[in-house]
Length: 196
Image (cartoon, rainbow, N blue to C red; front, side, top):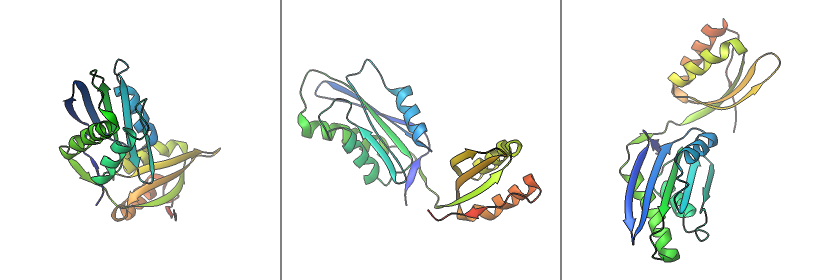
């Protein structure tokens, strides 16, 4: 069963005088991943290589290391341990000794593996995709109730009369959420199942 992280984690090691710090964190959107990378990258470091995975979406970068020696091994470590909704950033300070392409791949992938292995896991709920419309005044309360049920907002589209939301919610939470939406909107908001 896929898992995400309970919270941020870190792993540090030195390999042939190069210092590596691996940071990992749970994410719920590509914007979360980008924000984590921007907040934690060290501009004084030689390289800030990263990868993230969010369902079928994923991205990685080698940040100046030879192609395929950093981002892909980090992504492979995420996938090998059945993680999802996770971002991993590996920061390297070059120590003067060349590691070679194999050594770089082992260093980046290995750091990501060790960081994720020691992290506390949170099993991911199998979610269904639903859509509904709500008014602007209902939006904050709707999002609060959705968060309490560990649901995710996949997209929100603002219209002239309100907001169209696309969400992902655990199957066993759908009935509860529909009741809450009915209470909030006096029965006007209705959930629609989406085939994705």
